[in-house]
Length: 174
Image 1 (cartoon, rainbow, N blue to C red):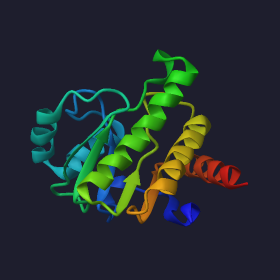
Image 2 (image 1 turned 30 degrees about the vertical axis):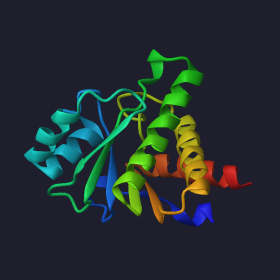
Image 3 (image 1 turned 180 degrees about the vertical axis):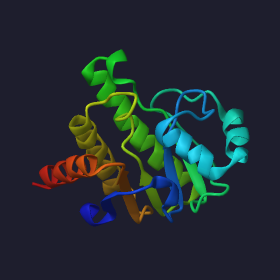
């Protein structure tokens, strides 16, 4: 069942003991603020070196590096949309692509467990509730067709974000 494979929690993505964590990156993959900066700091300088070899990364795409000093074996870097730079439909399409392309990368590297942040909801200003609905739907759609992923954690920075994700999952399942 798809629902049992999706876990929603409040926490620090850099401490998740999973095969892969997803980094809400910028196009340069050089590190930045928020989740991106936290992941780069926790992983150490080798993450920056490897990331720069893969840059640039276009919005909606995903690229994978080692996890270095993180508990996760892999870091999947994806670039979510900056909300106000796109029409609502295009922003939704790009955000869903960021989740699904990240999951494709997870399958490619053999990851069974994956943790995501709430992509684009920080400085990229994607409205939290809309982003949660897109995230949950994109992950659930992917898991319906891909059985190698055992667990996807949606790791939220705040209880408000987690509640938006829980509501989206509940509404999606009816």
